Image 1 (cartoon, one colour):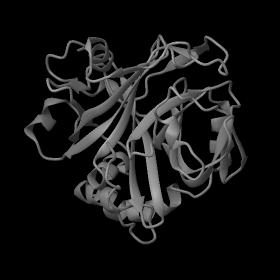
Image 2 (cartoon, one colour):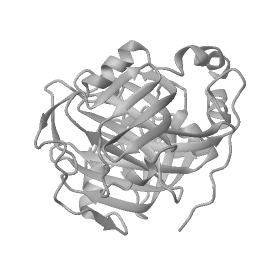
Image 3 (cartoon, helix red, strand yellow):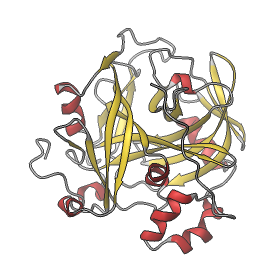
Length: 330
């Protein structure tokens, strides 16, 4: 079913912030500070340290919008060096087309896209959104729209091993689920992280965002109707993700099974909750958001990587947060 075009947001002149972000920044009391800080920290180019950082990574998180308007989050992997920046305004991604990935149809030439580079071993992460430049099926480039760093909060330290050549596709066909089954619910309830993609349409064009969410296992609640309820813990107060949801209430989520390389990808409707007695239920939560899956794809062994938890790698910030009462993962 085709979705209606995304509602448009307006940018605050002289800043990178749009309507939805500014509403939440105002409620948090940081609107004036971020109006000043925003132009300095959100750039239209990648600084050298970001360019060098992407080139070291074995994987990247991607947010893309399919032709039907549904937004998906995914991961792509390769030998370190599969991400290269020949100049500060371009990131090249040597990742071939993947028909099994529901996000792939949103990676055509001219499409808006978002990337998140994250190194679990050091907790470093940098974000990038821009426009796809594609000449063939072997990979694509991204011209920079926005580039900025993120704090290392809520990231658990993990180290990776490569289990197959990145050019060798997975051999397990994707599974299309009509609802979250027991296996999917178990993965979500025990997850200490996931990734979320959102987007808005601005006067200058579409803007996609993809970000990391983390906490202790049990911080994501699976409700009886199959929806998810997620606490929003203190962060950089940019409100890129929730600000997008306020304007365009959709999202794409991906949960990674780190020991197996499986991906659970979902796209659906999102809702931001800023006033509810449930907010106080989870320690550290400042607001909540809900996600209602409409399409679900499980891809076993989709990634050629496996991650092991590093001894002592618990995130100090995550340890100071709570989980949902009675959750089996707690």
